[in-house]
Image 1 (tube, rainbow, N blue to C red):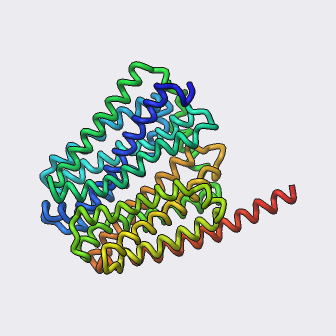
Image 2 (spheres, rainbow, N blue to C red):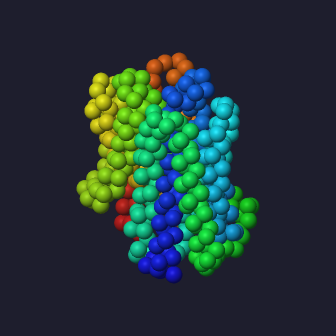
Length: 403
């Protein structure tokens, strides 16, 4: 099958829709934390646990879905997981207590974890290499748009129809995308045949082999630390702006959405930026922009300054994270699928740690210190990563000369 075939185009569209819903569900509660705090009469730090539990479940389950996709077919697992996401979203909408909300958000994270990594695996298996980069960009643009839309819709719907409306909308999106995927697969079973089962033991042995590689350990540590600071702080930005600038939840969500817009701009300018800055320049520049962005969000006296700061932080994040991704694909070439699963798991486990740490900081200090601290953390991380990249490139050049 080629990427030009109609079934393939339809599947890519449905995968983009599922990815959109997945990322929207991950970020939908960011801007509604103050509304959830009022609804359940609990502090913001307590209701923010829904983000932590979503991220923990999402990160851990990344490691399970690869073998399931190989055994039962990637599209079948994606379709079933997407429908299961609707259960988590509907349960969240109907929750009458914080404990119920936390339970269903955990289920939502555990099931949403299948969508994006297995979608990338399906593209890798079914789209010719020369068309793969463009296809992945089209499919993953749905995920970035979902991240933006989740932040905006969460705040807007909490302001207007009530926070439950956002989860009802997600329920419909998950049911539509999952149902259409399973229907398409039923009609065209050859789209996603199961592969030979490689077994649990072989899978965990491969994880151990990845962790034995020195460069892989450094990259995984970097992405874990990036997840702690970037996504941990991002979860509290809308609440900070709502309190500090006295804007509505809708306005706060719109300002935070500029983080995702920064990612879209980077995608559009990636080719000239990579050529001009190189990998060390992207890492260092990304760290500087994230540092300025999060400190700017912490101190912003006006909505315009906060908006520009969110954009800078988002642009910087995607500059550095894309460089981490590229290096992650080469940290264990013989076990690339396993390596990328561990990489994604470290990112989202870092997010869960970051949100928990952020909640602790909010109990002791103002959110200004949380965001400013994240900015300094990310600046240092970008500079360290740039230094490591220069070392690795030097080693590669030396090896090429001596060989």
